Amino acid sequence: MKTRHAVPLAFMVTWLLIQPPVRPTGNGTFDYDAKIPISEWAILKRFQHTDDCIAEMDKLETQFDQAWEHMQPTTYDYAFAMAHSWSQCVESNDPRLKDK
Image 1: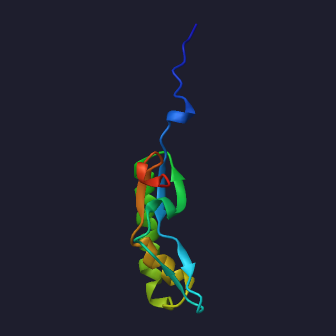
Image 2 (image 1 turned 180 degrees about the vertical axis):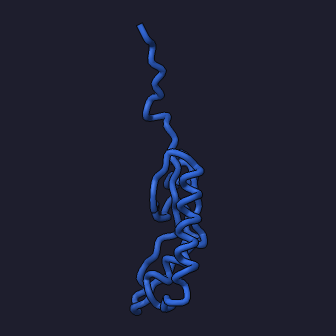
């Protein structure tokens, strides 16, 4: 008889690629606030491994670098690219993600 060593799902840690959310300013432009608690940041994607999260973060940064000169400063894409400069990979159990 084989014994299985399963890790309960409650204890599995995933990695989250997060960044400040982009919001409309009310005058037709968009902005972000990197000073808000990370518990309010946008989750872009979930990963099983930190290396995958970092690779995705780097891939997005490369895409933004290539498209940067074509973006208008008032657009959502521009604000999203700017917010991405603050992006982080954090563990899903990071205490900073809890609402205070």
